[in-house]
Image 1 (cartoon, rainbow, N blue to C red):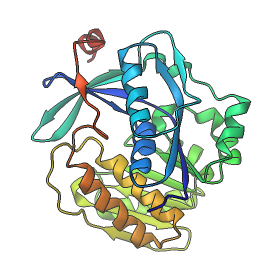
Image 2: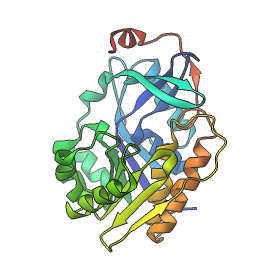
Image 3: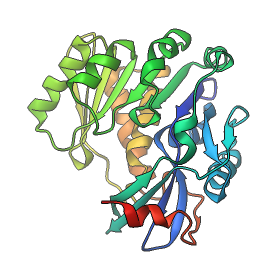
Image 4: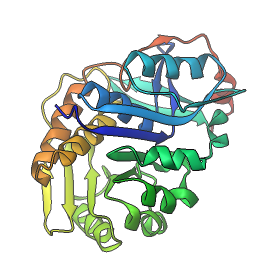
Length: 284
């Protein structure tokens, strides 16, 4: 599937640190999408900034093991980004985070030339690329963006018009409110907008009109951490295949259920020895 597509995840990475289990996993939206796209048969790369520490090495080692191109990743002195997570019956709760060296990341002119070689570039609100999004959109053949649950009217007005696909987490909204939200995104200029709603499934709309709904697939839940990124990845690859919107939703939901069956965003867990734990102590 999708072996002819080239996908670039750009921006955010983190080390998902499972505090009670004392295990850490590579993660972050852009990293997860790059790794999962490779698992689904696409050729993929990750472009970002990692720390010169155990966390940064974990991210790079995992991506290399998944055959993701990391040739343009910057390694900076200091700590890698890290998120602290607790679990209750497989579901996750974030306890705190710190950005590490990720904030030092800036795109160069050579990076924009590199971007142009991919069929689709994916980034997120956590990548903090706001001022560079217009230039990124001009360089990329297609651009997708995950707002997570950090969207508001100001952000949508800023980013939607540059996006081929815009993702939003909206588990807290009623279905009718999700439909109105998607229509607003299309009105702002997004070519396609998708609202994921956790166990309530997902909705999507495009400029062709109409909103489509998709239920979740049954899953044996081990860990939900990477499910949303799995949905995004399979949805995007189906869209690149030229499949209709309902089929893209179905592909996303099916793969999200599969991702729930393993630990972390895409596995590669290592024991956590408390590295970076002082940031958790300062978290609210």
